Length: 247
Image 1: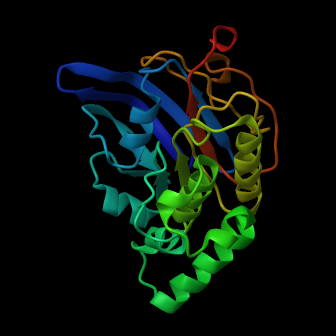
Image 2: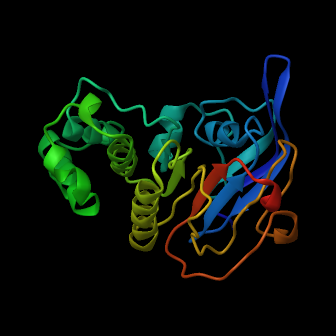
């Protein structure tokens, strides 16, 4: 049974049909990348998974249970964490305070959450020295690391990453995705939406979609793009604008 399964998903914004008949299956241990032009519906797909966009029809199953129509709070508690496009770090809070906010869905003491936030700096050593710095003082790459660390604080089974390389220099992109690769090896599973071109997740499946009505799944990889085997530890979904050669 797939960890995440989307069946014939339709999402509308008023009269605008953002998604039409999207079907995706993500197995445990997979990193899945959604590729498509701007406005193709990549971010909307992730927003529907995390409860930020309500499906007009279709279904979304997480570990066999329908989550279509549930609120974001309930979906986070089930084990899905969404790192949104644009980082969304609070500028007036310190780096550590921003990271600790990711555990707001959990019943844990402040001291326990503080210790876990400190442990995040082992995974993201580049921001350790900025622990007490305010969010607005960080660079784009540092803000992205804070956002991913905050998402991990929810202890998700599935991690959604929306445009994790947006606006970053190539060397910072490599650093960010090196960390994501480490997360994949060390945590249950992850799912992301990003602008990734140079990075190769070496994942069991990469979903290539340049149309909002494209249908692709792990069961039908020929509809999606290339596949290659990989170790099983994590799952991820990523969206990026596709160039002509990838469409």
